[in-house]
Length: 347
Image (cartoon, rainbow, N blue to C red):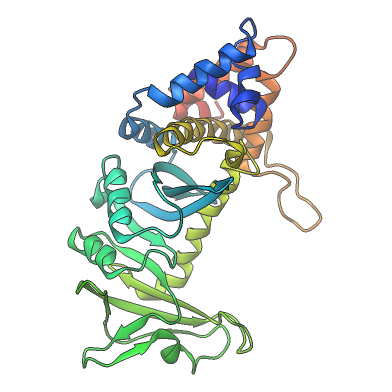
């Protein structure tokens, strides 16, 4: 695991043949590649233990804002489909649990429930401030499952999602939002019911906001809430985009996850386990650089040149890929994994 994680960081790719070049210098590339494939096919990895370890690396205590989303790519015609749950922190979702789905396309309510059960093996439901999710996570079965466990949630609804009033009237959500002016927010004054085709239902408070003019196709932000203050819903929903920052770090801005040729769910699951371990370590090193050297410089548009993750990745790559060994710098970075709080202190 240590050699493979270091190879991923050195080469910043999940292409196994390229990672094999950096695995063990004294071993042939073909042998290294075979070793990696054996690891990904048969190594017994306890993902709950790994999730708890990642939570320990996160310099944040409960309650947690949990962000859920799905990412998908294709190798040829074969889809690779991943559900991810992370903890929002400082602009990025810190990955805690993930589920690789057997098929492509949108995920089901049963898969959403199973994914959060995996998350609950790491974080107790009482430690969750809110589950924040996008328009794919709107089934009545899933939302009712959260309510039964007293887990607060905030999800975005599609504009055509029907809301059922206490009197039994069913209307698309966009009908209730149409009278709003641009950027106006309205909290509906009573609970509405979301009903599924399987007979399941969930009663929620609904928040409406017009986010674009009337000529735009997607004019509205429609949020369903339970267990949180509806007045805070639009601000809280902004946290959801932190999971997109995580996906960018795992893919195009980090280890190029989409370049892997793996498609079997269990192998992809193990590969992501190594990637999120590398992510946690890299993020800590980036946080340490900020404490020691200050934030990365800003570009003319006033945004930082590098994220915390990228800041740490550059530092680790400079150590791991240097022609001459840098044991003191390397073991100082390892200290972050062993004692995150001490590592992040400026003492």
